[in-house]
Length: 208
Ligand SMILES: [Zn+2]
Image (tube, rainbow, N blue to C red):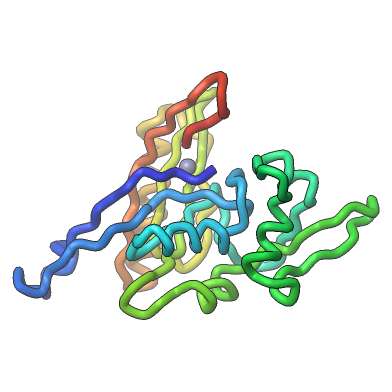
């Protein structure tokens, strides 16, 4: 599911810049792909944002970074993605070519597609000074049916969420602490923000 909420990030985050040098950048800091419960390939999503004139996009799948080897069944993709007359896989092939798209037959004889890692697809989509892809994870825990989600941006490695604590506030604090610790260890800035999860009933499932 693509969240199309727009976030404006002000360069005041970089205090070294003077007012004359500061500028606004348009981006989305909360985006899901097939690496978790999103409904499209990360390249297709990134391409959409780039074409809409965004300056940056943060891919933030649930408890996952787009690293390593991951295969998804075509049937699962087609169930998620509503494509008018053309399958999602066919659309992906048309946009990125047969050479780019990697498929195999699974043990059950059904087609599977390998998801590209961020390091693979950013070479195709990023444009220096114009469009930047940023790695992130939506650290996803829950208390009962209540999701406790935090987007951690610019991570160096995936964070396994702390889940089993007595209160929502404690879970939030523990997971924010993990991000702070990783940022201190890596010596680079990371941003964490709480995700408000809304649930839309009836037409289309979860909004976030
Ligand atoms: Zn989300």
